[in-house]
Length: 88
Image (cartoon, rainbow, N blue to C red; front, side):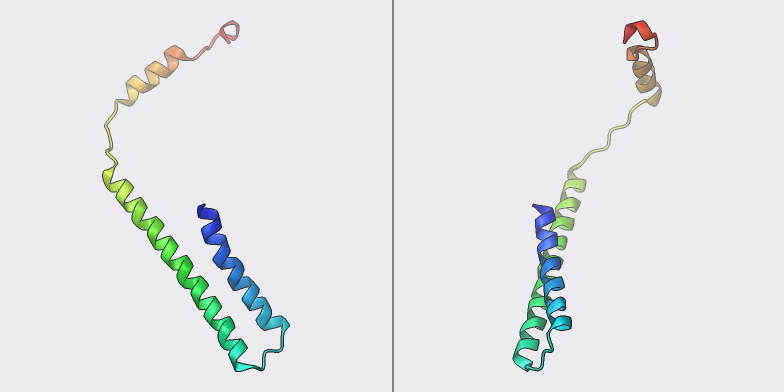
């Protein structure tokens, strides 16, 4: 789902940032690993968001807007609305 695809990378970034603040990282290998995990999560999010935006552009390009007469819509709504309490 979209929520999962967006929240998972954020959770990874938060967890790795937490590792940086909680642990006294002196090992360069561990620091590089955390950095790579954060970069990968950011790239994953960026790719997913870009894909969603591209799909939305495709959907919007295919959508057709139809002109309507608002007076007719209001008249139809008024005719079908029960104004009398006994009609409800």
